[in-house]
Image (cartoon, rainbow, N blue to C red):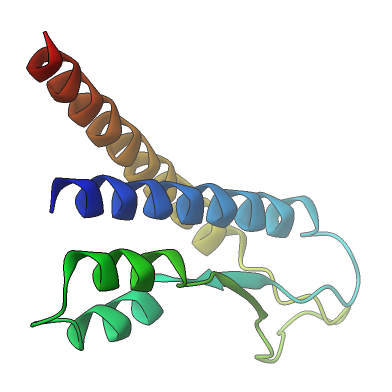
Length: 122
């Protein structure tokens, strides 16, 4: 069970890292004519997979966590700008701040779990 929790947290940290990269790319392209903002999904897909694992083995749960992929999508909503760019700078900055905090929490959780494992091994 602990192995799956650590594995899921690692997968979450990877997702949050990718989300930060996509958000920073959106911010970098705020002045690019015709650029369409992107976003990353992962959590909903993982939740769907794990909802079916109520009575599954630990190995099956680990497999489901490992096989959940991140997907980068383009926001196709219309732009209010004349150049067709749909990046909302305020929303992107809030998203970046939120993701940064979540990423740090995930890394702290992984670090704490590794510390507990080391203590148990001593």
